[in-house]
Amino acid sequence: MADHSLMSFSCPECGGSMVFNPTKGKLQCEYCDSLFTREEVEKFFAEKEQKIGEKDESKGWGEEEESSMRGYNCSSCGAELITDANTAVMRCPYCGNQTVAPVQFSGALRPDYVVPFAFTKKQAIEKYKGYYSGKFLLPKDFIASNQVEEIQGVYVPFWLFNGTADAEGEYEAYDKHDEGNYEITEYYKVDRKGRIGFTNVPTDASVRMADDLMDSIEPYKFDKLEKFTTAYLPGFMAEKFDVKLEDELDRAGSRVKESVKKKLHNTIKHSGFSTKHEKIDVNFNDTKYALLPVWLLTTNWNGKKWTFAMNGQTGKFIGDLPVSKLKLTLISVATFIASFIIFSMIWSVS
Amino acid sequence: MFMVLICAIVVTVLVAWLCYKSMKPVSNASSADNYVEKDIIFSINTENFLRKEKKRKKDDD
Image (tube, rainbow over all chains, first blue to last red; front, side):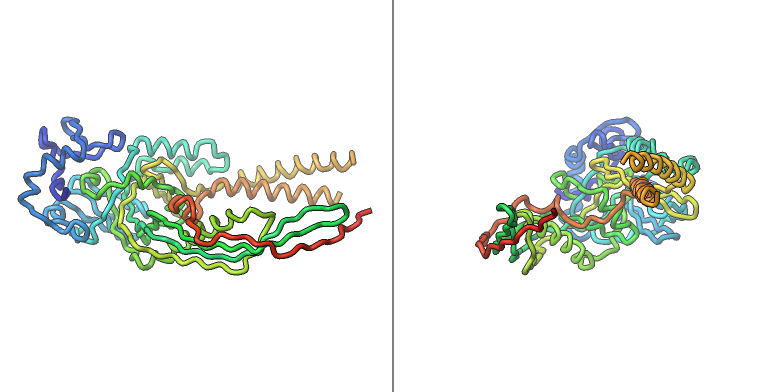
């Protein structure tokens, strides 16, 4: 079913605006708290949809869809964000600056799929607090200056790659064992040739989003991938992709190659082996443009930007934390004294 | 005493490095293990014996 009918997000009961409730997986009216599934809302707007008529589902945005969307531009880092008409963007999730200005929404490529948020902002804040609690090396003033409430739900654009990899390898494997005073080594010629499929290898399509940060919150469960509908946007924002599909082919390909190589090597059940020849050809036959849910918190501390991300589907939280030099020095001195005493005792006994 | 000092320094550097690394968990994914199929479908999967080498073990005594 075409989803441009969901644009207004008005409650079928009272006409109030609705937001997506990640915990319940439904759209909830902000005024009367009524809950609706995506299917129910789509059904409700079916009449409207008939009037709009058919449209290109995969590439462009519908006319009404565009009119209900808002564009925002960060004058600091240049991030281009989109959201629905009812969600205001006050702060850039990428650089943390409050220099986000509304701009005319311009239709970039419409996403094919979306993974909905499964965690609320409150849950994301709790996860963040749990993440840094008990970290002895964390500077105290970093926690104090942290604006946890500023954590924002962002649908980050991703390319998902499907395809196959044809692999072949020739290896010289060996087994060693002892026979009396002799060490016996037996050598084998090992040949492997085969094909393996891969599905939904993700690479983020955002220049501003650090690749390592996005890699670190993987994996996403793509069996929960839903056809994109703007019904998932209320309460969140989405970034327009600014990394072309062609630019991510190598990155996706090298990840697949590494996995295939590991799988080939795991089939060699000998003491050791050396590679004589190895070739892995990756063929992409399908790609999808999807929005994946990320709770993002960017804070500036000590002149440096600190970004934390939580997988909005699985709750996996990650982010590099600053280290207190004083505390690290204290730990090092204590370790040195303790280990010096222990080694001295061992030395004197022996 | 010199050996004790060296060992203590090595342990200290190792502990400090581990503590530091525990605060920096972000890293690039090098593989796509979660997205590739479990098994490779092989068209060739052979192993052939090549040769045997016999070496006298070194006498430590």
